[in-house]
Length: 276
Ligand SMILES: Nc1ncnc2c1ncn2[C@@H]1O[C@H](COP(=O)(O)OP(=O)(O)OP(=O)(O)O)[C@@H](O)[C@H]1O
Image (spheres, helix red, strand yellow):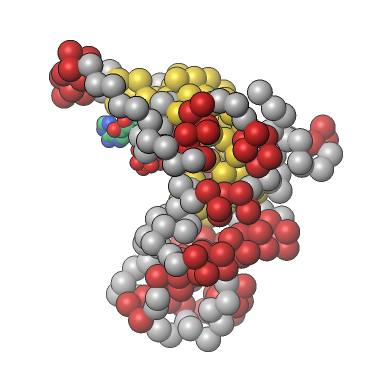
């Protein structure tokens, strides 16, 4: 196992921005995450990779406080998300930006109104300030001047960037990005990668990206966590992941499907457990 903080400057002086210990998650009686440890340091871009069903979304849902750990703990910015009171949760939410797969913009609002939403929800700024701040963030994502368009008038890449503008409008310390490249052509996807790097460098954000896209992962990651069947196989730098002699990691990198051995008894047992 390699030191996940190896590329982060001066790690000894900093507290982790995400600190997950022994996280276990279940759906029904089926255990999905088997005691995950996961630490992200300030200013780091962490990519979570793994095959389909490896537990990436389940981990992300726990990091966002959408699911509570059955065992283990999840601390974001020093706050234990499952034990924080409503006030602490709200404070935490203000410091976290989330950009979901598909953009999830409200189709009945203009791009500018979408971006302004968190400011309206979490601040008392006046209209003018909100407008200026939203426009500035649209400029950061290269969508300056697009504030009056409706989401339906944007291309797929522009929707992603608009969603990103909304996610960063509060200047979060921590940004979650779920599948930034999904459905984008390679050029647009590369532009988005550049933007993610800029957010880390110019705005000093810590960023967690879940992605299937290897090229994108290798370009943006300071560190990569590889998940497999609810376990962390490895956390390390891009070079460390590439050089890993773990067969599962190599299969993932070479896009070799895992051999699926289905034990029918086991399959039926799991099915009935899930429905119980
Ligand atoms: N709501 C649910 N109820 C029951 N089982 C679930 C539920 N959501 C996910 N699972 C199971 O949990 C396991 C992990 O799923 P998860 O969605 O976290 O994986 P993933 O790595 O995000 O997959 P993908 O890349 O396909 O989105 C899978 O076996 C999945 O079938």
